[in-house]
Image 1: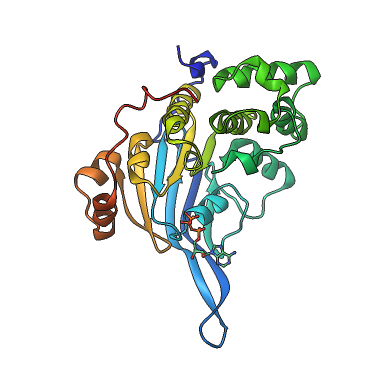
Image 2 (image 1 turned 90 degrees about the vertical axis):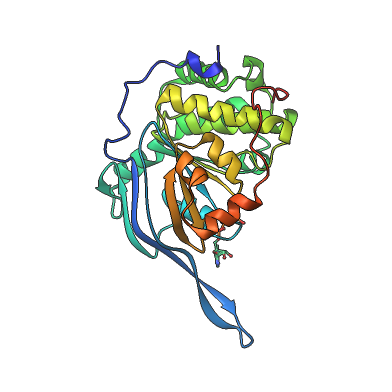
Length: 286
Ligand SMILES: Nc1ncnc2c1ncn2[C@@H]1O[C@H](COP(=O)(O)OP(=O)(O)OP(=O)(O)O)[C@@H](O)[C@H]1O
């Protein structure tokens, strides 16, 4: 039984329901120094993107370094405001929210970063890392939070003893499991995973990938999976958005994008990609 199967089943929600997150004609422009005279230039990191993610689906965003993936992730989770465009959260305008609405957004949308070594406080125990969001959001009492820590560890396939260690005392793959557990602590509707396997040893990438896939199914999560690696994105995604120079240049089911890409940039990415993860279940345990 996969660890994710211990989680209480959630009511099925159709992926055709209102998206949890939706962006319309979204732009993020940065002022940057450039040119011979150091005249400020505008970097169009995100340049007119329409995007949505619903519960129960994994949407992959793929593109080369600098195409705007992390900027888009940061807008999706509310860490950065767009220059212009519309952001909707469960169908409601995201700008101008009340404090209560911001708190609800913080509960419902969480992020897993690329490098768990820097994303987790090295001085905190795993127990404290996992109870932190619960305390901030005023969830439960000490006993119920302790119980939730053990539940979360089980969900991500870590032993109860992991609660007592600090991030520096466990492997990179285990650290990323802790980061995923923290992202799940408040029972989010969507997780944005920004290159979540890129900093891990090749031998443990597939386990973390499979864990995310299992969790999406079991918890009916919406997931945005961001990577420069089109093969990894294909493996985990239901739908793929190919990004180039701040724009989504192609979007479709994983099969459509792979089997009949219509955009030249997608064809180039596919041409440059190494072979697909062959059997992700047979690699060493993280
Ligand atoms: N704060 C900033 N000021 C100026 N330019 C920025 C800023 N943040 C990002 N950029 C630029 O915006 C563009 C998109 O950056 P972003 O980090 O979103 O791309 P990315 O696809 O995530 O790349 P990577 O995979 O290397 O992280 C790049 O040209 C980057 O240099």
